[in-house]
Amino acid sequence: MSFQVKQHSSILDIDAAAWNVLAADSPFLRHEFLGALERAGCVGEGTTWKPTHLTVTDADGNLAGALPLYVKYDSQGEFVFDWSWANSYNHEGLPYYPKLVSAVPFTPVTGQRLLITESGEFTMIAAELLSAARNLSRKLNVSSLHVLFPTDTDRRFLSNEGLLQRKNYQFHWHNDDYKNFEEFLARFVSAKRKKVRRERRRIIETGIRFEHLSGNEPNEEDWDTLFEYYARTFLRRGRYPYLNREFFREIAQTMPENIVLILARLNSKLIATAICFRSEDTLYGRYWGSLADFHSLHFEACYYQGIEYCIKQGLSRFEPGTQGEHKLSRGFTPTATWSNHWILDSVFGRAIAQFLDQERMHVDTYMKELTDHVPYRKNHVIPLSTAHGPL
Image (cartoon, rainbow, N blue to C red; front, side, top):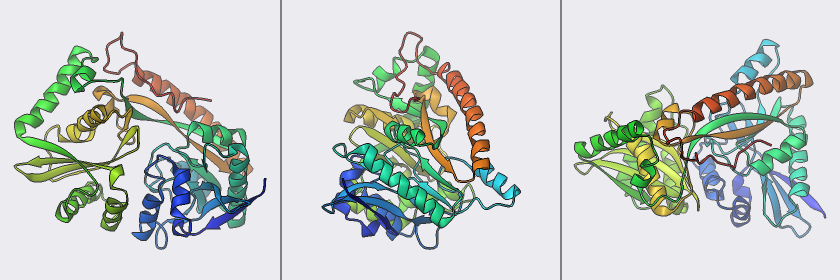
């Protein structure tokens, strides 16, 4: 079978409908999402994310595969932390940046990176994409190629092709066909169950009420407030937000059905938001912001409301974002996430491989410790994900 590989400096140069067939059900891989990042200036010219996507077309000119790819000039917005690698390169007088990264910018969510339809010849097309990415790495003289948060299928292929494998974890909630929130909570040990009820009661007693909206339902004024709260979360930490108002304005119109807005109001005033995304089976908690600190409001808006939404909508999983051991006591369980890495310098490659072997042992041990502290009763089977298990 004859294929042609092309390099694109913008997602906007690729047919949206054809790309979305490859993106399948992921809201973050949709052409609308990646295109909005470019049009709003969150990636591209003037940023440290330079698009350089790869596509494979068949003999008839049809899009058969794609690899979302960026030249990166720092490690911000990736959530697979390689600062120590960069420091080691710098210590030896070698440049670590630029590097090539296959990822969704600012989005630590597991998903396809080798975008190939189920009916496609996966191994053949994936090999074309990886070969092109390696050739591009050499041509650009980058230090490394990184594939962040790949699916099992992707990472197994990449590992078999010699890319190093790195393990980390997040906390996910899994729906055991619960009829309502109380049935879910009934699986907890008594002390943990009382704690959750106490946190939720505080919100009710304060008079805070919630609503769930899709992306195109809030008016412009409410969206302005939502963005203000989102930006404030970053500014409090001394950083500018990754995303701007134009990005949210665009996706609210182009992909509203994938956006779930959890809004908190007190006396009709909008006081907090959790901006989430959804696929057919998963809710993704992404951004949080509030007017001021209210006791337990973060837990309610970012966790309990999302769980209730999943139960009502019949979604199987809720991924509320990275880090946060405090999620454990609220019913989220440790779930493995992965990344693959190709280090062009063989000496650094061997050193990083040894580091990853040691790091994986620590991650495995810590995940085991975390699992021993879940809030569920001992006779309850912990609904761990099988989607991101070991090779």
